[in-house]
Length: 171
Image (cartoon, rainbow, N blue to C red; front, side, top):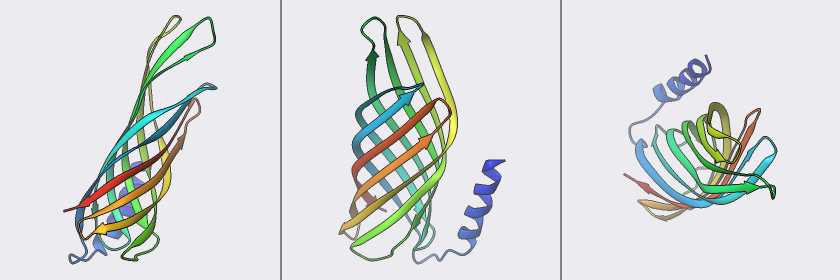
């Protein structure tokens, strides 16, 4: 049902788009991701890959992937290793349309999974949650920009946030 709502919003923006400003883009970013599960948390290196299509100056449809390096949490007796990744489907709304610096909001559905390995429990947990984020982008040239972004989602048992710096290319 959540996808129906997203589909209607995307369709509205799509039919209002202009072909002159439509373009594809891709972003590669690295940063620091924080993953929490049932009160245990850690911060590790992360990377994200995003691809999108701008339908007009304000709205884009995006597909993204984020991953946090494998990490281990221990309480001195037991330890558990986490391997976290998520797939994102959503939109991006540009708040400003300046040529050199622009701010944006990012939102959509995140499909996440974490593989657990430890002394007490082995297995995986997966779910999907609404995500949101914001970012700043500054132009390097007509075909590239530097992207600084924050992404977050909050599930009943897991939380993920990512602060990253990346390069975006326009095609």
